[in-house]
Image 1 (cartoon, rainbow, N blue to C red):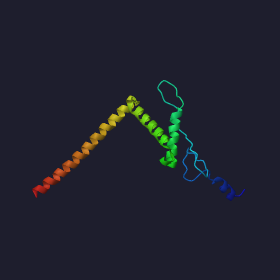
Image 2 (cartoon, helix red, strand yellow):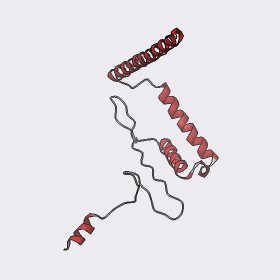
Image 3 (cartoon, rainbow, N blue to C red):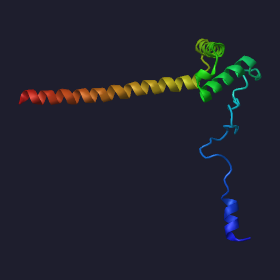
Length: 141
């Protein structure tokens, strides 16, 4: 086996240029088939076990993928209303549900928030004092 054949074997490319890992694409001539690969197939509960995603949630994700790939004009009015209703419901439930942040995470977030406010206050104080000093020197002249 020559070195050219070895290099040819090593440098072979499998896949499509620009394609991302984990994203599947079906090569068809007509309309693309939408493949839903939702990694959030299980509902997380504390102390419980994961349950598979409900068919309504899978249908909403499928509609979202169709809208993403082909545009919202590819969906019927009923599909759009169903997708919008599901997204609104999910947002409302997330907003209304009790915060799942651990006490440590809450502490770090408040600490970082306070530190950021302090830093912003110091910077603005320095800028204001420089501006006042500059104005005073102008008035003295």
